[in-house]
Length: 449
Image (cartoon, rainbow, N blue to C red; front, side, top):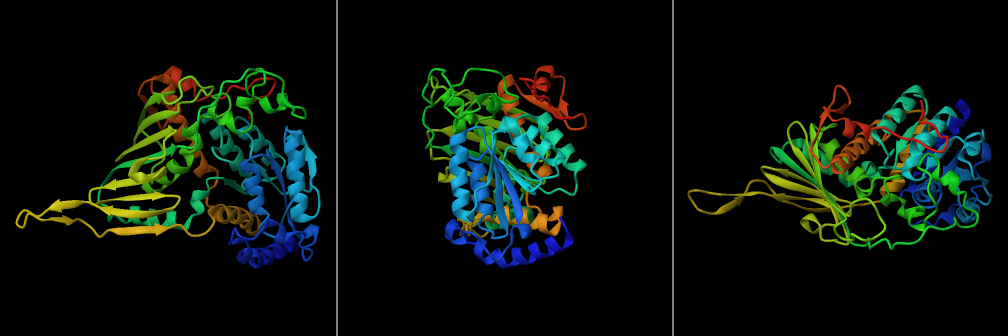
């Protein structure tokens, strides 16, 4: 990017801040910003446009200096729908690709959003960096610990390229305040951190027969490095999350968001041990593979972390469907996407016999603003300013959350407590667990080097 273009984009970014602060502005209101020429925009491509890939791009398009010039997806119907969305927002149809590698060869693309299923993230991420593109990659960053490490190595090889992971809670103001409280020491000794996701909206995935892929879908490309198997609608689009070939269930889908905040607040990275228990207890006969009910205990140096998830239930800990609780001797701080509050402990005065609070309660502090918009704007500004240190969730941050979540799944799959050797980067005396660290690519696709 030339210095003159970067200077212009900095001015454009400052001018668009007020616009992008609010999600209530219709995307169409920013249609075709004629005061910015095509040569003075950040040009994005999207790989995997159906769900979060498009949500991320739509958020980026709230910034007038960001444009979408290319889309890649294996489903022609998705391509057509998103192309129409881009044309409505910007007045010009993007170039369309079935093969993401052809999009990466497009020299007009400055940055890519990777919103593909998890099993594709690593290969696409490495290829994008090799093509000289900045990358916004959805969480979890990968489907194995080995792939997480490969992505870290690739990012280090290309230090001038910005990488943002879609763990957008890191761009949330009330999370920052909650983390300040946790680190202040006022809660006293924090011995336990609870993280959870209770998802009442998730109903059984009905069993369906294998069949032919829908017209316009390049199913072989969708499978990519995953094992070859017949097309089944349950494994396609959103529900891929509940099958081991492509993802890690709620442990990695929701887990990385909550585990990220928990470990960041506690200044922790890797556990000493993990044990997990659960299974398909809510819907034992439905089509999904990953557990619908799971508890995992992670042992760190000075505290333990308890992960819980359950489908078909909304009433989680502290009456919240999802969240993080930092449980200290003096009080408990509970934070989730709606806000945070502090619940004090009480102790009995021996002389008066009256219970008293060990610290002041803090009533609920509500969330304000759109954190996804904050997160995408942070990425675009990091590109413009050539400032990787300003990124709210870089690849190392994303890898810590993903690796810990993968450890939880490995403990569940082995059915026993697993012990981590941080120096060697493997499980202690456990060949079966260590085998699950590795990626296993199929159909001619190779694990990145």
